[in-house]
Image (tube, rainbow, N blue to C red; front, side, top):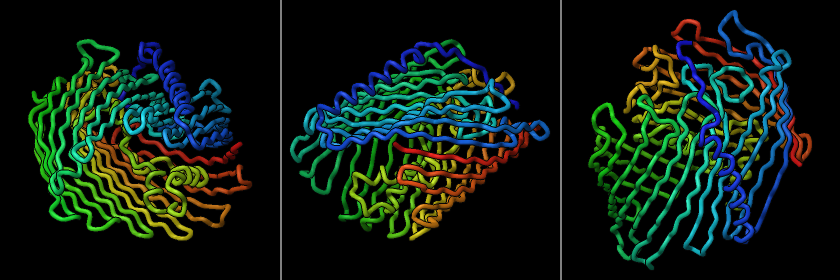
Length: 528
């Protein structure tokens, strides 16, 4: 593979500080919950057992494949609390992977997803918190896998957390004020992505109902990103500052005109010589019915013309969604706010669980995903590691059709990234001959999922995906194809099993880069 991956030290300051901070965050949220009159608590231990046979455990090129049997023993626990002053959802799994032929590759992976909100003072002082531990692919042009069982050398831990206290003030019907502080961090086990911490303040003042048809807002944001390792070849610490104002005018109850304007000041060293300046946009918001909403805008920022579009339409059986955006961002931002279609949220919005109280719908969707073996995200683009700032243009579209026994979901994503800062920031990620690999990239993906409920206890799934990733500077192109067929059976209320066949394939225009894999997995999941 043209790309070479270099390891960075694991025991840097952010890695050492992550676990104590995460523990403090979890403990604080739990302690606060008992003082916040949580109404309902649900704690569910679980155990997942899996056995997989694969004919290409390392996703090696043709002629170099090695088969293996892989055993997984994955204990986990989920916690949810909902009350008048608290919302908390979290799940943790310890994934233990054992290889029959390659015991030296046995591994333990920690997987955490937690978020919560606590109202400390009635309608005044709140705290949001999030924490995650996951495993992600490092390079967009290396072997791609999603379940950690393949031994690729292109996957590592990504740990994130954020804590955000804020005050929300209401000046009767005149205006409302939000003052928010957010501290977050992103760290990786290896792979060359610089660990980082960020502190941000956000102030926003927005008009109330006293202004009738006219709406207005004033906003200020200032963020400091501190990177763990700094040298002449890595990204220095960065300050990002934005002043903005927005106006809206309601022409009719369903249609409004919108406008924004302001100035952004960013001190990262841009390749174009511009990293800030004045900006403006103009657009509209249209809600012709309770089931349909459309918003669009066009304007200018320091990098050129900019556009945005968001369309949502719901019917009794379908949900349509289109989202287009353009922004300066980073890999760390993508991990803190994943740019993918959350399956659970998508199913809730498709009205599949409208028969349940609103507070129970998300949990029902997550249980549905687990029972049917569905992916946690749809149309997830390849989020590769880079320490550079980049201009991202992203189009995301999806549609779901829900019937009595069938659910069909189609999704599409097209993401282009144009590097804004120097190649030197990625010197720890890429070999000397591959520094231009991440200059300008494009990833286009299409996914289809069909779920058939054969009976109340049995369901079948068929999913297929295709992703094409290209590097303009190096003319490299990789096509990733996946096909999965699974059957899930509910044996008892707290016991289900699944058998799955999968095929993964990569076609690359680079020599000695393509591969294919076939695998079969049988699993049992128990809740206690």
